[in-house]
Image (tube, rainbow, N blue to C red):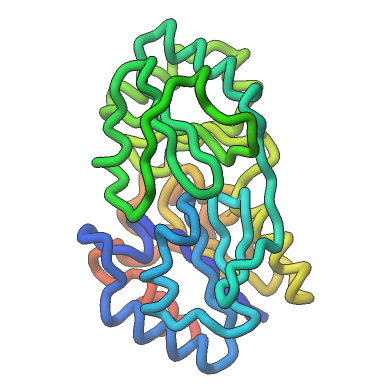
Length: 266
């Protein structure tokens, strides 16, 4: 029986204006009030999606958000960390050298802010993401020795296609690499994905994957779409992502989430 609904944000729950439509919000709030768990699953930190948490009123003691593509699970009401999986600064040296040798931009995120690396090609990640995140300009060698969540390479879709195609195995084998948007490529710890974050949360709630329904559209949603009892793919997703899901709904500008949930739960 489905008891938890996990939702990607960009191009899934959010429309092209980065908004949760009235139809989507009303449907999710009704299900939440009826006892279903509603969990946002995003690559962003909690502060950057807090307006969506508030809009859906996901503020009960057992409401959580999966952030950093599964690298952190947060309890919403007090922002207490349930689970965190991190990288060290040294883990990014290989990637930094690759970016430097190939004239590529790079941003590195801890669990609160983004460091835009000024010793590399200028990044447009801030403009592409368009979210409430603090950006700090710094050189790689000046970054603090602390825990980090991921690195971001932001460029045109074609440029990232070329980078992915020509990427050496040493880079591929040291990171979990996903495209969260056409212009954003993410480099995560190999163990980090949304399914792993959701698994920790399901255990906390005494549930399992047989109780899970997920909605997604992109490469960073693959693991949770596969793991869930029902993985629903948006119609705006690429063909290879659609093949992974159990079902397909309308696109993100047609209230695809609400459409499917109303149909499924009647």
